[in-house]
Length: 71
Image (cartoon, rainbow, N blue to C red; front, top):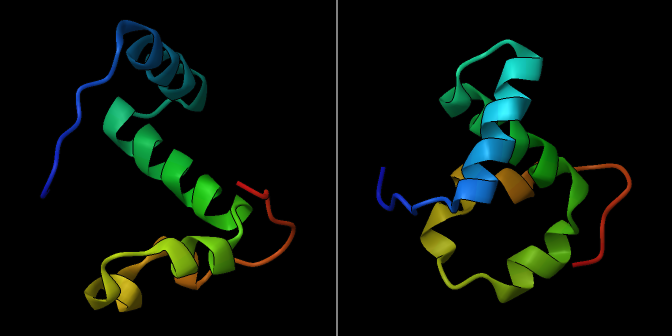
């Protein structure tokens, strides 16, 4: 992993509870959350703001479809 941000107590607690509800470890829950977010957000907006074009083939936002959230 290139960057490991620290979570606040609030966000760590939320992630823990999501993981419990999904009956999976927190690390896997975080991956699932990113997959859901990748599907929900407007990939055109994300891509136009991107500063790392070397990552496009592996990017979550390349494949998303359906209804988008306008962030």
